[in-house]
Image (tube, rainbow, N blue to C red; front, side, top):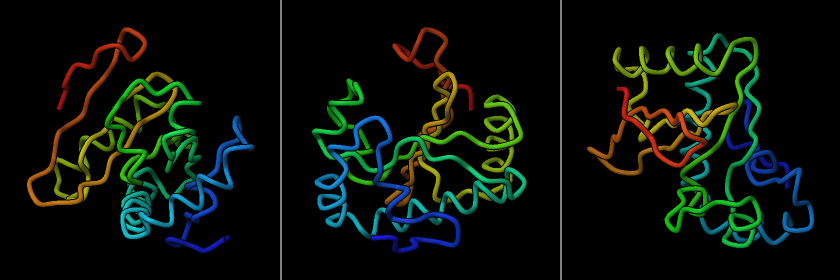
Length: 153
């Protein structure tokens, strides 16, 4: 299935796993139960892509069923990846810190109303989409290998 969820993001891209290809087929079947959340997440990614200069964004992990979530080493029992409300990304042409700072500014300027949370997790950003009103959590940074997070915005 190569269905586009938005201009730049496809179902295939948001449900794949380069490191665990043997789990992808079932992961994609399970993702179909969360189509609306996946489409909402892809629309948020479009906004983020635009804010970051209309440069490509690499999705390193999107939807993950429980088996894939465990295989990638997630320790979260309530991972938003398992309900298609989270994605891990690496922006092109800028550092993670620069992208993080731009997203904070954009949120402060009212440009990301559907953003729930951003975690700066070392070499990638974890992005969560809000699925309800008043669900905003903030921007967080980990300085200890993702064991703890400090709210910065």
